[in-house]
Image (cartoon, rainbow, N blue to C red; front, side, top):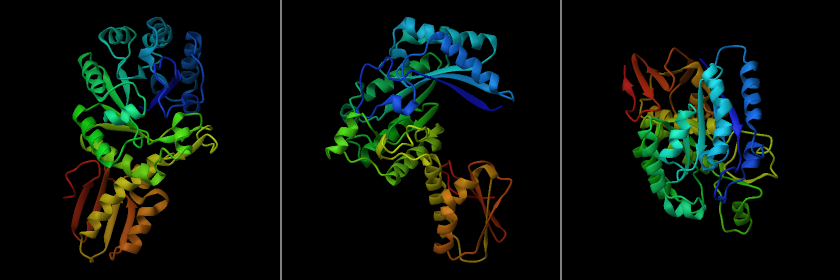
Length: 351
């Protein structure tokens, strides 16, 4: 059954800090705190529009949900809980800060049926967190993750490669630290420089050098590959495209493109496939099979992997959709068949 999110945006509400990169009004296109009645109407509108059965999840995004006063949280949660109890929706989740997680808070969330909490981690490098003015430490992430696990919540981590002070060794350490913590899911948002942020002022003054789109793809692909290899479900790479984000007067620089997810997977799939193909003999010809839903990942964004293979490899290659599991590539040369599991570190296996 298809999972559908009902996004309930609370931009900046509850946040005790203004991070250098943050302008939630632009990212979400929403301002202000919704009323309980607005939450109720939003849930009803989404669920009534579906023509087929779906798994509905109400999600409080955009701010620091658990940093808001308890009565405000309860007012927003009540209509979602009513919909959950009535069977209109199937789950409730929120995003929040790592330093706004306590037993009291988690007990309240449980009373209203919430099962998933995503933490705005951004980095596990305290120097990077300080320069971003996050107001929390990597230690807070460790403690919050452990407490969420203790209370039985599904745990998500949101990361932002490209923050001020991050270099490649810092990114590698952050990735390794997240893999050790083993969240259930992760989102990766390479930094975009948004108008109206302190980061934009630093960029204009020459104090901050943002990632290019290519650099953002490289860093995000590294993180995603390692997360998947450790069994961490990476559910999003790159900001969701909106009218505001597609306005070049609002996104001034940095690693934003609506195609970020496709570019990241093109890099992950392409690097592994091309590396393996280069290890094979020149003859006979090679057939490459893949799941229909993996077509763009295997062939590459705008067929870049197919084109690269064509001019850089001596073998004759045939590409086609096949009965192959998602995340796998079937490589056939003569009578020899290999299975390449892109999301595993085991490497190609002969089948």
